[in-house]
Length: 466
Ligand code: SAH
Image 1: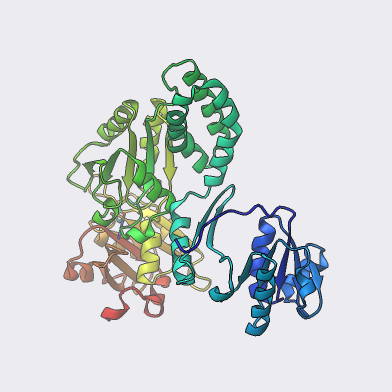
Image 2: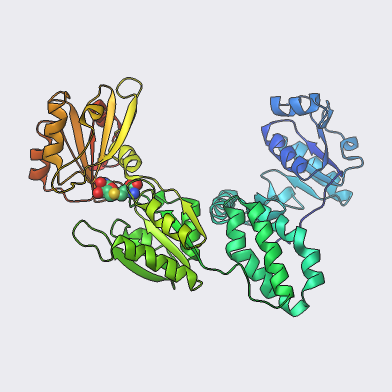
């Protein structure tokens, strides 16, 4: 270890910053976040610092650096753009045994600034020992993504209960108790923004543990998670966290293998099917299975393509959980329409071409598509049809019969957002024939509307192939 990481308490401590530019401003912001009293020495200040000085939030010595600038300081940062000045600051500070950092000049530093992930009171500092600040920043981005935004909230909750837990539980029981709290359903309540419920659950868990009764907040619960349209990059951070946590995964055929790969290695994976003709399990069986697994204490991940509440029957699944008193959480996903829009270059709305956008299902009920055709065939409206491939011909015919021009541009996109994506565009009257020629297969999304014209300018995903 070239440097020892430590965390300094700078609350109300005088700190000297030499230099008044934007780099200095960033360091000042960090020092102030830690509660330091900052004095900036520089003939002139950048607008951000000038504003702070005006409001009296920092002190300003409007002059060139002189040794007096360090008087009383417990820590020094040099951020001028003149190396000779920075070197002088460094020399004087070290002579007084003051910790000194010179921005971007490790040789002149007695301490270096890490990349910081701030989930106060939880703070993570990452450093490459000055080898590569960019690498440290990349590492920081990964940590930011991996650590839930409400991690600090969880720490504060733990802090509020710490003394009480110590009073009521024996030392040998405390660790297991906290491990249960900090990675189980109580933590999950905090992460999903329900600190109040978490507090109540923690109260109950503590009472039960003190009375040596079984944990009332059993671990069983269900996460109904949108897996997006296929490309794993389009998962939400919440989805990824729950995927890493669940004991059992129920998934259907829309969930891509790449996405499934990101679930916990040792989690049990159950395919519940749901292609048009091949229902591995009927919907009621899926509902019952989720309830059963959760009641056994499992953390169940119900992973659904796209968004669970867009033609995903998520509502029905949740109803049966609620009826059985099983705790659940719902995480939205990128729905196919959004994925298609971005990856095929077809915006869903546009100032000039579409002021509304409707999502409908083209699913056939006893061979017919039962849609509000008049409502669909409106000017300046984008129509997005999920599950529309089988009835495509009828769909186009009906739209034309209800007033859409025969040459209205339309597109069918197969497997949007993944490398196998295919797009067929044509005038509405020719669409079904073109799609049949191309041999497109589900999952496909149909988009009808003037916005399809924009594809020529906006398609970037397949750009290399064209
Ligand atoms: N809940 C999902 C939709 C489920 S219905 C969502 O929000 O996206 C299944 C239909 O979604 C498919 O028949 C197809 O029309 C569409 N779909 C899902 N993923 C798709 C993809 N990657 N490309 C094209 N269409 C897709």
